[in-house]
Length: 81
Image (cartoon, rainbow, N blue to C red; front, side):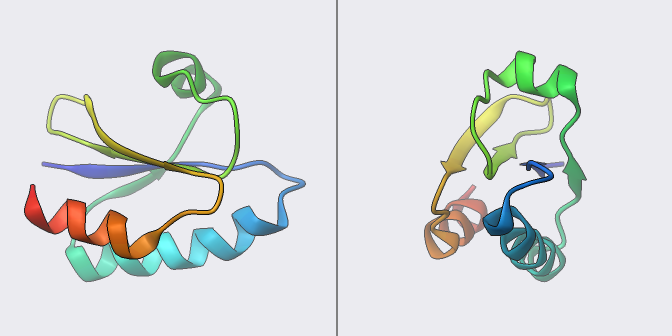
């Protein structure tokens, strides 16, 4: 099953706002959402926050949104795959 992986930072105000939006999108699309761990940052080479990854069943990255996240593009991509 596809899923979202959310990367954030404690001192990031944009991350707080985006967390609510990605949670709502995940619920709408009925896709699991999990918070990234430090190991995930290394595995997926994520250096900035916020970053949202759309992953396939095997945990491979399908799509990445970072910085100013375009939620419409993310939703469209998740619906097509």
